Length: 440
Image (cartoon, rainbow, N blue to C red; front, side, top):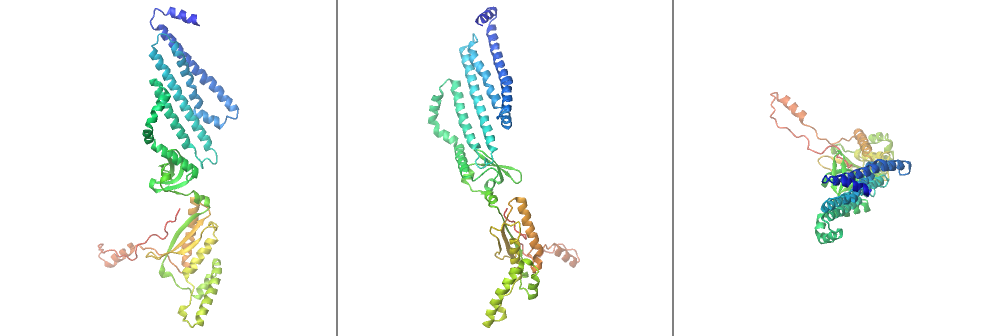
């Protein structure tokens, strides 16, 4: 080999730089050949071997997709050039040093990028576990990447300027305060990620509501710096991770795990329709199976009460009587107690709220057995459909504002002159809708 190079050198002696260019071209050809053999033969054989072993299948496909091994294969030609550049004759020593430094930088950066892809592959493999959403590790891997690339950057600078790596690291010790200021958000986010992971306050798939950040939807990703929320309108909101520790938010996961979703909605009863029931009306209400127990208990209670008043010579006006509102309230409670969509183990109330100019609110407070949104809304709507339809059977009516548009048309007809300047008359005070929106 040495004799062949000498004969080549003698043959190209009349041509300046011809021998140097020839050797350099041979070095580049050797680097290309090493790259070709590595990627086309070794990697293809390794891929076939992985498919035949336990490492094949989905895991192998993922590694191929992330291109971890092909990225590492790029190191081979760089090592060939770094080792062979010193053999090329008549090159300036400074150029040789620069090429070696660049090859070393390329190798270090390539290995760092490959390690980053390996971390991504590990994270994706971990996310396939059923319990991965409870303890996400993506934030930890992001911290490792930050530290790794900072060290890689220091190594690149040290290599290019010809300094020692440890000397630069020691010099950076004096800049700790500056680095703390620069990476303040990263440090706070890291602490928040660890805290969130440990106490499980937020997990992937949770429904969180954070009005201060305009976030209301499912958590789809937990990273080092941000938590990504897909809102119900299909938009995406990114919330700083540290905000989930410093600010308040609502997590609906415990509602789902608790087996009940709250219904808290009121019917506004017209107070003018509330009255005592006559005996024949009470007898008619016995048609309702749900009211048998209530009417029997109420009859015994009122008989004892009124008998005691009669012995004292009290006037009949002091007697207690059954009201249509009380009977309707008992009917609603028994109806909910026998409803298959209501969780009977949780709180169930049918109560009156403070009367207002909008009527007397009769509030339904209970929990559905199914917490899914669509099912919950269906159960809630079915309940109030039934209550609104059966309300007139008890002689009650809902309080509702009436539009005065029809009245104005009638007044114009009575005027006969079509004068549209007559002021509108308010026949009923303004009030909120019939059913206040219940909590989701």
